[in-house]
Length: 218
Length: 404
Image 1: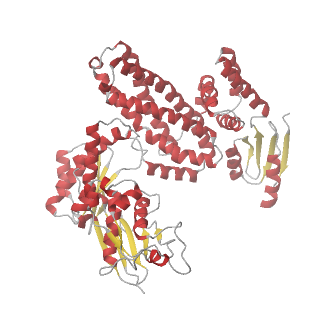
Image 2: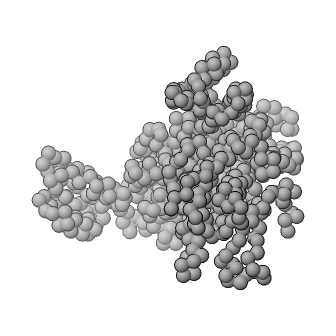
Image 3: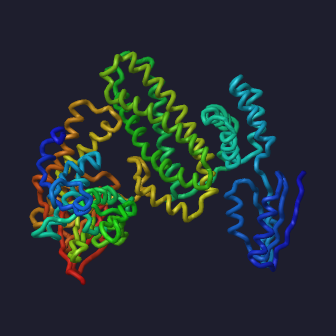
């Protein structure tokens, strides 16, 4: 199935999890297997690949590396605060990717079985702005309160200005279905070039994706 | 019957006042007037009654220790609605004959824009289709009431969302006039090459027309839902149907303008003329209805808080490339230079600067005063930029550089 996707999308490093809820309810053949979530899963959920979906995937992946340096992350045991409103810019879209990957959900999430496996309200939105230049997301482990703050600076992602301008020019023809075949191809290549730069080449990633490990508070 | 009733509610408690006012207002028949005598200016009541669109409100006396408010029920009575239904049937059967127009004029002049909108809404709820209203009654309004509607029109200043919508309308109408002139020249032209400058002009007009999509989007996603919350449902629904029709035709015109070689020239010409004539006539008439009826209803019904919200939501949707600059939210590109090696900074700044469109701003954050950069702008872009410090040290400097 994933063979239908552009090659580099399949090369993105997957994120591995344990999923205790599925383990408990018998969805697996073996005990405590490792689940893999790929960038293609995020593309299927969002319906497209773009710098926002790529930024969300990488934000989550890097945050989990910070939260679980020597362990496999556990779905459903991570709380996320999105420092933005659900309908502000692309915060909502990024939150959906976090939800897909970690299981943390907003008001529509699973209420849990007894005192366990609650996913509802693990994902929250806060209008507070921590850094005016960045989109900020906080990931917190429920078992030990270890917390990572991710700062994502979309404007700092390197992409030549002439290519950005060309993308804008081509977009109108695409949307009004007047673009020629070669223009469609040019548009798609440019669009994917930026996504590939982010996901595979990780060009200057330290400039546009920063992590702060916060002190554990008991 | 033009009966007048009076209630004197001076000195009564809040609950007692309401207990007298609302049943009395509710009980007013068409053309009856209620005089309310009260010891303060009942502003909230006035707004509430105006918002209902069924009353004419006037002050008979304004203070200092007594206010008398006259509430006159002007809602179109069943008789007027019946007359409108008859008019619709006549329009459907015989078109807009001189006699029908005369009758329509007399009928329509008796009501204001808000009552008219509400009456249309009631007719639709009683089974008259949107399309019938759209094609006949709406158009007859325009024909017979153009001058009177314009003279009663309320204007608001920037950055009120209605001002933005109306300013955008003026620019769209200019494009439509250009389209109309181009369409008039087209029949005499025999080939694509002979179109000369008109080929580029057609592309430019088509580009402007598709750019106006964010104008429709702001109406559909922000303004109309607010009106619907006030039970003004049908007028926005009619406007949305118009948008669908325009969208299809704008798309075809855009495709013709940008890919004329894909068509046989006579076929190209016929389609451009047909689409051009339709859009010039119908879109301009749609704009007139919005400026003079729909927006006027909105101005009467929505309060200051709701307009604030509409403004914020419109900013989120975005504006057209031609929206006047003082109406739209400032488009700002951020650049934090602090973590960047010094030798890369100027190159990055000018890369982003080149990508800015006029009216857009680059905001840079730096760890020292970027004075040399200011000199460079003065030397290379004099008259094309505005320089404004937002913060001047001691640790960080923030400068907004706007392309003008």
